[in-house]
Amino acid sequence: MKFLVYMFFLFSSLNAFSKVNDHFVYNKSYFNSKSDIKLLSTKGMPAVPAKSYILSTALNEQPLVDIKRSWRKSNIKSKWFISNGQKCRCREEISTINVEVNNFSAKHDIFYLGDFRGEHLYKITIPLIKIENGQEYFLESFNISSDNFKHFKTSRYLFENNEIVIVLPTEFSSTIELIKKYYEKKFGTVSFVTDPVITSNRKKLSQHLEALFHKRGIEHVLFVGNSNFVPTYYVETKFDSVTPSDYPYFKFGGNKDLIPDVIGSRWSFSNPEQIKGFIKKLNNRVSPDNVISLGVSSNEGSNPSDKEYVDSILNLISSQKYRTHYNQDDDNSNSSSFLNILNQGVDLFNYIGHGTGFSWPSFGKEVLISELESWAPNKRNPIIIDVACQNGKFNGRGYIGEVMVSGHQKYDFRNGAAAYIGGSVDISWDPPAIFAQGMARALGNDENLPVGEAMFRGFFHLMEMHHDIEDFVDHLEWTHLQGDPTASIK
Image (cartoon, rainbow, N blue to C red; front, side, top):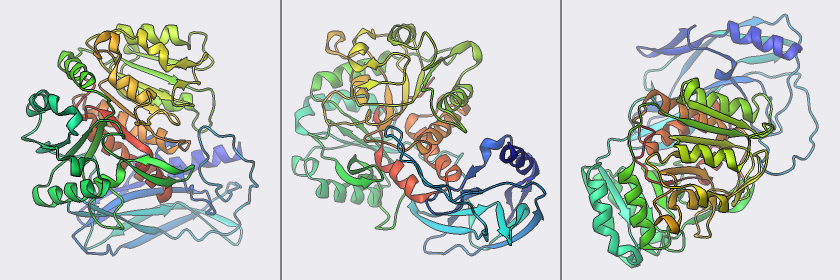
């Protein structure tokens, strides 16, 4: 209780900064709730409140900043502990020892994020608490100034849809005109990579895409086919040493670069018939008068719980009248209710809970991927944000993400989702949910926003709200967009 009272005092007293010429200064209206502040989560560091911001500089310039701080003594006795890091969403947590923080100097940290389409990005993280000789202080005010950086505006459009490059293996060559016709309506240029020497070789394909980026500034890359047709990379993340990942294909700023430069997506299909059905489904979608959203949450988690995460996401997307939320403890959290809503028509579906790859265990009664065969075709094909382990694999074995996008043969592959975002291995607890909140905020603010653009807004939201760089990179490596990157919720 003391901790909660102290945090309320902290949140009501802090100010954020906004850009004024070359200075960041206070803006009391910034903080709307305690959700705007997150604790430092890097393992081994004090888990105290902090704020992170993304800075942009000209090429090859290190940001030089001057921070003037004003501290106030805290009159409330509270306890802060060393962070044990993020736990895995789908593995039993190993008990850890809480170590109390007795001294903490609250130094800021500047970390290089890499090149993003010609802008060099840095992340500055500022702790809002310090402890000296047992006395606790909170940051009452601060002012940041610099001659060579600016605040990176993540709310602007990051991509202009000038060109999409479609990697099309020969097995799908019969669909080239169909795909081209669909994307010519959305892009200035539609180009294809069809040479099997390139499409089947990771190194050659990476080099080819990088050359196209530097020559033409391409903005989208779409892989057609599962990982048996267009090979993926396998990288090490916190919970899996062989994480399937397309992320290395999409960043072109050198070894220290962390930020993808293009929107990357994949159609994890196995045959041309799936492509034909998928494009028919996309062409059949309608723009709804009101956006309908559906959320499903586990009965786990705290500060916030999965239920609170889903509530926050649905609130950003739909009015109360047009949203439905099934929590795991609800009597109607089952496949019958779920499929009934899908068949009525949904524009966005968010699941936050456990995943096996082939099921969602965090319904009141586990829902199997095989049950989605009862999802009939309709004109509302949702965007799916799936915060769960394993469901986003794309190797052609019929994982949840693959089936939700491809649909079923009995409907000529015309049922299912327009786009799916999910993790390809066991994922961490909070970062993917914070990312989903960022996506929902972007989609709610602009209902015509393409899901690929919203995904990047989610990435940058996570970067600003969650302070651990390793967790952020893990999220980039295991998170994948399947389906149409241009689909929107309206």
